[in-house]
Image 1 (cartoon, chains in turn orange, cyan):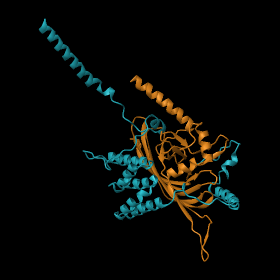
Image 2 (cartoon, helix red, strand yellow; image 1 turned 135 degrees about the horizontal axis):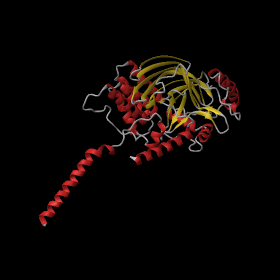
Image 3 (spheres, chains in turn cyan, red; image 1 turned 60 degrees about the horizontal axis):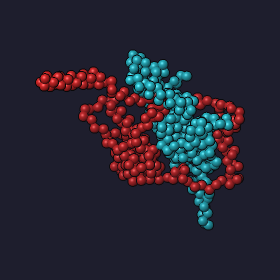
Image 4 (tube, one colour; image 1 turned 60 degrees about the vertical axis):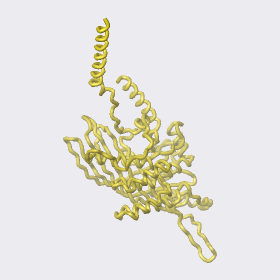
Length: 244
Length: 206
């Protein structure tokens, strides 16, 4: 038993050290963000066959793996990552996923090891970069909460929710998608002072401006995912702190 | 002397057996490892015990008793989690697992499987997506399946070859970029790199 405690303390201390290096603040709950979409750009390269000139837009797709590849190909990103992780890594490893912090409004890279890295921040030259960013305009919510059991649920509809990818490469690729996000929360009591918390998110039919390797265009896409936390303190309101 | 020795030996054996039984009854629970719980903070958990590599499993868990609604939902979520893990791989077995879930009885799992095919990113999934769409009565699901097939038929944003911008195009794009950033993020510096050396924190997200 004593050995178990020592081991747990050691592991916790090691994990905390890693987190401190990787992200300034540990998110309470992260919801996965399975981003995918397509982009149409106009290359302005008309084809003239002598009798007819045609101009066709170029359509391409992206998913989470592509976002990781795009960022890793950008020296601005790799330098920033190297700085942010204090030299631990300079590229995102394969199987990296993305998730967002419901309470902190930040997007994180979730490494295969479980470590998390906030996808915006200053580099070592004090330049701020937003590699993956999100925000929303207005929200309508309805919730039901049982004061006696400490359990309940909430559904939020976020208008003009947006997510943006920017690789800061040269030439640059940047995709901005805006639409409605729906969040579904569920909270359950698990102990005297803690509760479980889960949230699922759905973002469909997002659309907006895009730029691929310097060429401008439009993008469409979606994102979905979920997250859970098994022991959140009762001192934290289980749903969105939307009155803040 | 000999019977006495045998009797003593038998007595000793009985005592050992009795002690073993007592220990098993009273101390057995303390050796049980604590139940694995999901942490609110993903880093420590995954650093301590990385998630196991996905292995082929039955699409629907087989249980002897009817599951409670909570257990049912938990099983769906567990399969959705596995689908996401498979979608990050690049091996045929993972793709095969994903495609098998396109026809799962649970709609939530089928939806997660469609998304997983997109995240896996292989054109090998296109025939299965189209075949499943042709056998689906749900119009929304049919559209989602065909959309996923179309998505996979597009070239990846990382693989396209576009002609380099001419100096004139690059020059013209600069102002366009600034206008775009001002329109999308009016509270943010028009170019975040303009804060270089000043140590300024941009406007918070919310």
